[in-house]
Length: 407
Image (cartoon, rainbow, N blue to C red; front, side, top):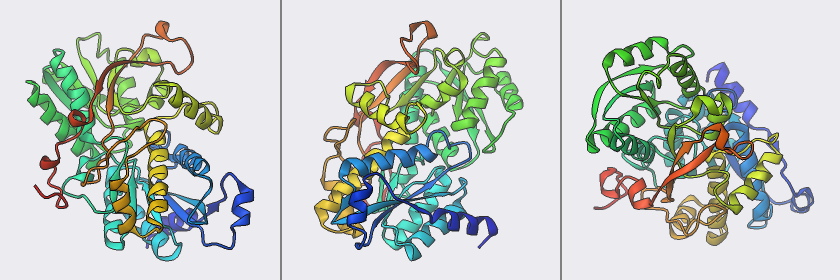
């Protein structure tokens, strides 16, 4: 095991007591139920996941009552640095020696796929929130993997289809050079072609790239009218900032943000993001329930507002705990069956089905970033463009090549 892996493993084993300390103390003689969060704590996906995912999971445990099966619930969180080898090693260590009952998050798709394999081998539930690749419920699906939040199919078909039908018929992609980027590029290209568009080319940039100028020059010379960013986090922010400096929109380009979140808008500023369209299943200002939950989350996060992955972490932990209670056990096979049997219900999902391939079938939304003059309050960034029903948002079951699905 490498030095960095050992550091991640040892660092990740710190357990933190949650809210409701009196309840936890009263049950301290019982073996705790442990939720393990494999997260990006300092890299490009820290703001969209990271510490915020822990806070969301704490809120889920608090709302559930602090215990399940008469056992206290604890969280373990470790930094996997978006590296498959570290994620795999930490997942194995937590399962084999730390008694972790369920794994969650996963950050980058490459590290998430590694966690999926570990959970398949060791029969542990994996609550997938960070990774976006649609392969999680496709050819790499697992009987123990439940995919909450987004995936590359839904992101691509929401934004890609809408912009192509609106006249953006020729595309060039700047793509993150790892599993997530490849899947998002693939699914977006398929959506663009299906909507009548063409692909002028693509270039791949390593995760953590800071200077995208050469990639933007290549995109400009392609003659494409739409610049598609198949990346996320700080990589996407750097792309958007440099595209604005390039005068992309003034030069007639449409910019397609295939995975943008509210933290990106907050970081870059509304003026830079104005007019951008993106696909998401959660927005803090969607309704009274989302506003109330977001206020609770923000109180622990310095007044920020949560994004999709934070809401997804709450949803995932809540649904798993309900399934554990219903099964009367943390056994992965029994709990997985209950998770697919029970509808998903929380502050932003109502009677949502978990499909046999592990896909959580919530509806998606198409959002547009407002002009700053339209905003009525801080973080009032977006306005709804369209609601995408589940049967349109997610890949058809028969098309995923998941070996669990009999068609």
